Length: 100
Image 1 (cartoon, helix red, strand yellow):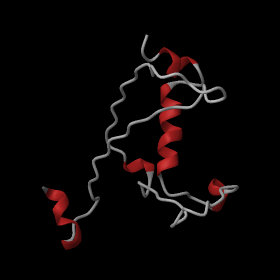
Image 2: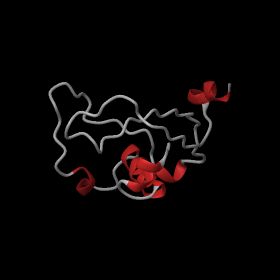
Image 3: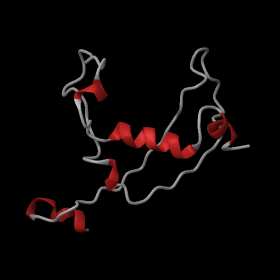
C-alpha cells in the first residue's frame, strides 16, 4: 500500500518534510554544516533553494512504492522528485519575468 513504508519506517511525514525543508534552506549557523566536506567536483560548495524555509507557501505530497530493487545497505534511502515554483518575495526590474 503506497505511503505505509514512508510513514512507518522512520517518523511521521510532517517531521520528514521538516528535515527536507531544513536541508533546502540557507544554514542559520556554521554548526549546521559541520562535518560537510567539499568534493573536488563541487563548485561552489553548496546550493540553497530557500533563504528561509518559512517562505514555503504550499506543499503537496504523493507517495508511491518504488518497484526497483534496493541495493543492500540502501533500504532507508529515498527517491524524491521535487517540483518547485519559484516566486520572488519582492518585485524589481531584475525579477519581472517571474510575473508571467
